[in-house]
Image (cartoon, rainbow, N blue to C red):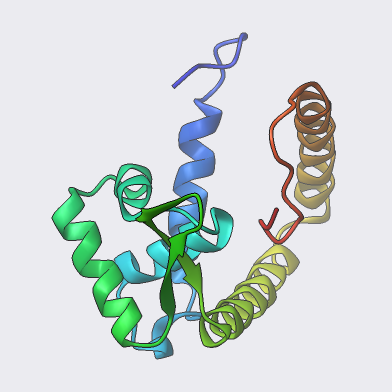
Length: 159
């Protein structure tokens, strides 16, 4: 992980820690009868619709058999479905079911509500500083994306 030029805290590490704390602290997904690894798989497939099990294993840092077992459980639960790649029938692509999409939308809404409540407890000065820093970061990421020729995602993480 790269440090900021002026030697400040490792921003990537802090952002990752914030995401993990938000997920762990959030009750948004606790009543879903999903494990955290299963939720993570669904979130990856939502972001990378059509990923293969091999791609998924690489992204989530699991061995292929473990990723395959997670996918199998999610397929049996009716949250993922497999589709043969039309260009290569041996390749199987993963897609969310309508039930999974609805479930993740509920998780997103709950998490956003929780985060809004937490931000409401932050000082006005802290919120202003955070808004300024995030605006600058969004501008930089947007500029970086304009230079990138890869596929674009919507704010919901979809192509």
